[in-house]
Length: 378
Image 1 (tube, one colour):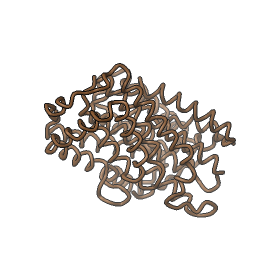
Image 2 (cartoon, rainbow, N blue to C red; image 1 turned 90 degrees about the horizontal axis):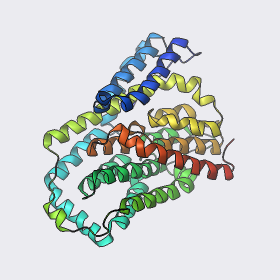
Image 3 (cartoon, rainbow, N blue to C red; image 1 turned 45 degrees about the vertical axis):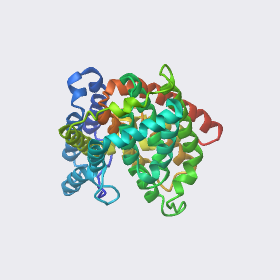
């Protein structure tokens, strides 16, 4: 994606009011309006267009940069690190693969589940996908997990709970290499010069001691929640009789909705950039850790691009990134696994937030205490 150059300058009152208004609408309307909740993708696209229009009219987004932004919004859902394999194609192709080959896939899942039991099965799957999402990409990890969850013979409420919790692990694990997700790519690029000379393994070295235990801990908690109140042994015959409930039209529509959602987040990320520059990036690290909860709705790669730089102490970088990574699991727009899973399992905003917000806050508090004890806040 091309870098967009903005004329940030001093805060413009009208723009500040508009952007904060959009921020409130994005947070509140999906919770209070069923129509908005059911049409989340076009709603976010509209909010992104309004945000971008407001900074264009204020002269913050130069006219010469508009074609670049439009190109980025159109290509972001279908490109990954310059390669034409993005979230939209992965979601669509995985849907086709499961549509045509679901029987052997379901049988394999069933045999593994029967052998391990539900609790161990969930623990191993979440841990494995969480720790490898930075290599296979978080998109692939999220698609695989979503399809596995769709196949499991669990009550819907249990599927939603286990999916939302696991998304935290996938999102955190993806940040360990530049291959995993855009946030990691941007951070490594911005820190590639002195004094950090960041390379492929930079984030693994600097965040591994925080992220890896977190992924395993979240996987364990998810597994325990999955097994609570559910029979430990599941009859293998269930998977022999299970039909893939998605249609070709449904698979196509889901890919289109994911495309719109990612394009909308690209626009929102650019639209909110002035707010980040004016206010968020100037806050001390121990406060920015909590302020970064805004990444639940704002693209965390955009926030990382504004906040992270070679002028920061490594502990400031670590605290800012952990705030972004954890908060990203709290709402559907916060991270790629959330978007993929919510689309596949038809999870609504209220359902996601009912689990994601309290769990995210608890995880943030645990990490805050641990990181403060390690002297990471400045």
